[in-house]
Amino acid sequence: MLPIDPTALDSEDIGEKEATLHMDHEEAIEHVREAFTQEGFGVATEFSPSDMLNEKIGADRDPYYVLGACNPTMADRALDATDNRMGGLFPCNVVIWQEEPGVQTVYHVSIMKVARLVGMAPDDETMQGIVDDTGELVEAAWANLDAA
Image (cartoon, rainbow, N blue to C red; front, side, top):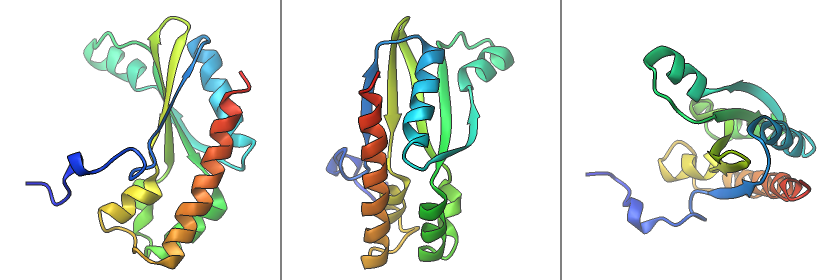
């Protein structure tokens, strides 16, 4: 039995965000990267699980890409607030997958909110401030996606 009832959570509880972009997959990756970079996120890591799985096990997956976005100020604050535990969830991933040629889904969940739900981060004012500040940055980055 899970300690958290997933059916009791809604998308706001985990900071879930999803958007659709009508563009080619590579263009969508660049667009999402730029949208987050404009709001102070760097891309600490990135990779294509679809390329890896297709190569290693012949999975025949459609394009799927992960941008590991990180805002250094938020990351530093989160490490302090969680006695370094937050690093277990770093970076904040933004995922882009192809629904069909020319249609991409962009997906993100808040690692700050998830960390509180699973007990890696305290449920206190300090962490709430980090959740709020990070949420504002993600909202601004998400708004940049509409510029496509």
